Every structure is written in structure tokens, then in C-alpha cells.
Image 1: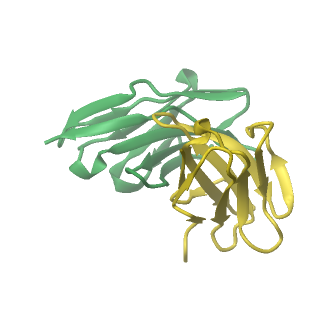
Image 2: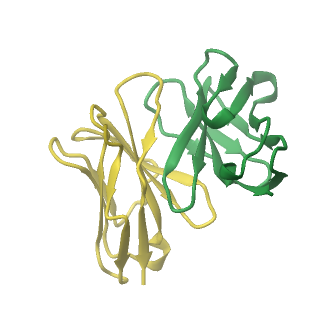
Length: 114
Length: 114
């Protein structure tokens, strides 16, 4: 049973380019969460999605960042016009539709903005 | 609003000695509490979780944690440290409403001294 998949594992972008990060949840999981980890810090919540719906985006920056989880295919976190401050590890987690909220994490995408 | 405080960003213990990593939480609703471990350049792995059942929770790799409501604490312990325990440990809290975002502490880096 494959775990949460994220790709790419490493992504290098120049300032002003776009970054697209992909997350495939575990089989049977319909809830996806994105977190960002800045160097030497803990993880910060960004957005929580179910299929075709954004449930909570209270942690998303107001500009340049967007997320989707389409009916078919992986969840996408999109960062437009990246800046150096976007350099971080971005983790995706998924959970089943149940009460205990056990989230399973992917290996992360490490974004470096030059 | 919820928050987590992890006392001690770095903890060093000798191999075979007791491991104690501290976590205090703040929550306006009954919490779910979690401990995750992160090895270098990897994602987070769930060690254990408290979801309002037994207050003493046993996890993987010999770790356990005790939920103390009066002290708003959820400290992580292991009787005898092993070299393979060297990693970053994160305490996290969510509400008990199900499928809620996790709020993480800033992490504790555990070093094992041979």
C-alpha cells in the first residue's frame, strides 16, 4: 500500500518563475493538507482540501499561492512569481474521512528559489 | 485557537539513558495530541497520538507519552535511548472535531551521545 507521494522531491526555480508541487494521497484518503517548513522551524499549516473543495485556506498567503484537489489526479500547490522567501520544504499529508484525524505525511518537496 | 510549546530546541542524552521531550499545549476545545519524528531530509512519521481514550499512550519504537490535562502537557518519553533515535521530534495539536489541521511546535532535535 503506497504512502503519500510527492513530486518533485527537489525543485529549483529562479525568482519570478512558477512552482507546481504535486501530491497523491494514500489510497482511500479523500482529505489533503499542505504544510510549509521553513529552515529551523516547525511545520505551518497552509491549506486543507477535499476532492474539488477547499475546506480551510487560513494558512495560505493571500497572493501568489493557490491549491486544488481535482476529482481526478493529484492535489497541486501552485506558487506564482516565486521569491527567495518561498524557499522551504512543502509537505503534503492525507487522511481518511473519519474522526481520529490521523494524517500521513509525504516525503516533501524542497523548493529552492535562486 | 491552539498552540504548542516545546521546551528545549536541542536535547542530548547518552545512549541507554532516559529520553524526555517536553510539550505543553493550549487549546480552547478538547484536543487531539500527536508526536511525530522527522529524520533528515524525510517526511514526518507518526510516533503516537492521544484521542481522548487512555491518557498514557504507547507508540512505536518504545516511545510513550502521558496526557495530563491539569498541566496541559503531553511529554514524550523513552526509558532507554538508542542511537537510531537521533532525529527531530514535533509535538502537534488539533481539535477533536475530526479532520482538522495540525498545529505544530517548533521541534526538538534529539542527539544521542555514544
